[in-house]
Length: 453
Ligand SMILES: Cc1ncc(COP(=O)(O)O)c(C=O)c1O
Figure 1 (cartoon, rainbow, N blue to C red):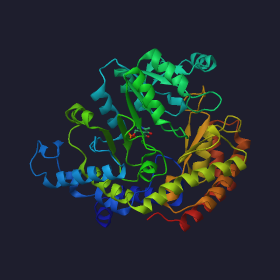
Figure 2: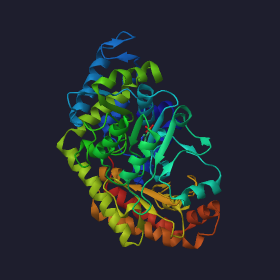
Figure 3: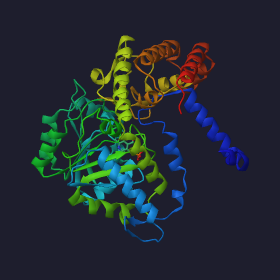
Figure 4: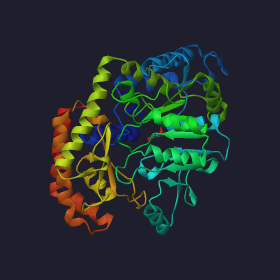
């Protein structure tokens, strides 16, 4: 760092400011974490200089003996962390969760094939395909229809929906949880080639066996995307789909705390195709520095201390949920089984976007989110998503969750008089507010007691 300070003051200043922001505020975005200094060291290492297109032992470039050793180590540790059966194998080269998913589609599907995944506004993920309906009336009609299937709006938003035909299952309107009987009916009707579970905002356990049985019935592959839960699975705090699904994808930078990247676990008979989908299908040289981070992070994840971490992440989220309910907030599905939860703000003075900004000014970083049966657009939805991975990395426990829930209610109370203002005016009021500043000050004090190492 000292050298950067001398050679590039501007970048140094930006990084220093960002580090202070992360230290002095509460990151409650469930997809974020703070990596150990060892992971950061590996990611910042000379491994990023090397080109290594290809797979272990068969690269298109010379000089890869140490890269081979590193990639093998990452694979071996992934096998250990996820208790991989002998009939499964690993790819650690995908650059991100989205590329990992795309690689699986490229390996298992033909363009135009139907895939069945969770409806995005209910908590699914963009990379599972999404076609948005820009016409608000049509969106409203879809919500009112009560149908648990969505076959897409007119705007194909990402490459998955451009190349394939995503059909999406919604959650039960009463419980906001999976309705497996309905998912089976949808699968029987649309006959997808691939069924996907997993998402960014679903707070409950998914029954992988039921999903596999549905996939088997219609002759589909079953992919479980555990991008969010990977660390909880490795730490034994959440059920594992390994050995049940045909393929499991994950990101390494969320609960797994292993630097940025992705891991694909798959039945051995599929891994060759998946490797080829990564290279030459989608990518060039792997990001060896990230693979180094993944290896180090997995090394940490197979230690007993990580089990404690994973368990505490869930306990903290559940404690936060209860404390928020005690503050009269309504939670989607009434709670959580994992590291994240969603507050249904539809009956509160402020919805997701303005409230997320007020909280950010109070030192609590969260993100706005859609929720089941939300007809509002994703840029201005009804819910707020909160998570505990970073708070738990800091060493916070249930007691701190109660305090945080109090601050969140206090912020809403303070913001109530601004509910009719435009977003910009509300931001101005919140920036000036002494009460919001006071929360930010108290948050900073708490953060000082739980520094990030
Ligand atoms: C379920 C799920 N899959 C895939 C991804 C994509 O990961 P990335 O941002 O690394 O592309 C995410 C990211 O949030 C996710 O939540």
